[in-house]
Amino acid sequence: MEVIILNTPQEVEELGGKLLTEQIRKKRDSVLGLATGATMHGVYKYLAAQELDFSAVKSFNLDEYYGLGANHPCSYHTYMRQHLFDRVNIQPENTYVPDGLAQDVERHCLDYEQAIEQAGGIDLQLLGLGEDGHIGFNEPSSSLSAGMRIKTLTPMTRRTNQRDFPPGETMPMHVLTLGIGNILAARRCVLLANGAKKAPAVQAMVEGPITAMCPASALQQHRSTTVIIDEAAAAFLQLADYFRCVYEHKPEWQRGK
Ligand code: GLP
Image 1 (tube, rainbow, N blue to C red):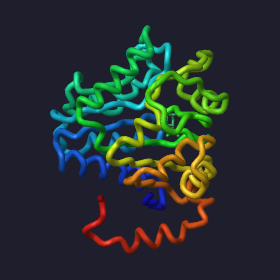
Image 2 (tube, protein in one colour; image 1 turned 45 degrees about the vertical axis):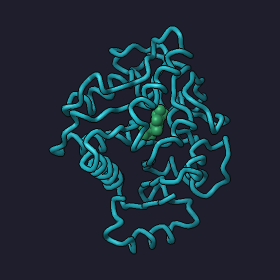
Image 3 (cartoon, helix red, strand yellow; image 1 turned 45 degrees about the horizontal axis):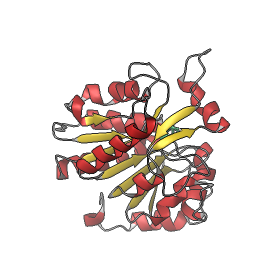
Image 4 (cartoon, helix red, strand yellow; image 1 turned 30 degrees about the horizontal axis):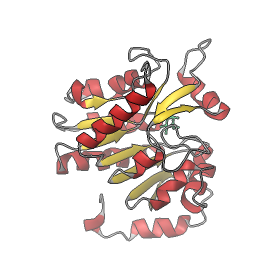
């Protein structure tokens, strides 16, 4: 696991955007695994501002609220259209987001996984981090080899994400999410986290034991994961100085790899 500590959230989001840009420049038909959440706003803003050709890119989002249709203002479909898909020349038929209204959930999950496989697997999986250590919507106690499925959100995540819903509207309790097994199958993972609230989860993910109590800790077993965090999110890392030193002395040719 490579850990990059930067001064500000803006720098974190910009480096995330740069890594995605390089991925698309290197392979114009890249298969991207995409995430939502506030941390990704700056990443997509950066991406949309580049002269990038998305015409051959395919994307698969990690998760969606179960019960919300694609046009619901708080759905991740809407989020993705607003922040990225409507701003670049990606083909709508190449963008996949789990269907929050799927009737046959098991069938839908299998079809979604199959579509990823048919696309050749995910080249770069972008990830945010929940305050409870979730990635996608794999909450604590999730199987570390699970595939895509329906999950129940923890009260903590429901409280945190309630901010994305207008007052009076209760957010869904269930979600569809790719599993940790799907995430670990991506060729590269890039996880971004900012702010003091994420510091305990960052510490558990990077330096704690691999445990279902912190699903993101499974990334310790992934062969190519880059974690990019700001100083506030790095506050509890014992090895913070070592990570800074490694990044500072990273050979020029290795940067962005
Ligand atoms: C949601 C998403 C996650 C994301 C997390 C962090 O729970 N399902 O994929 O990583 O939010 O969000 P934020 O960046 O807003 O802190």
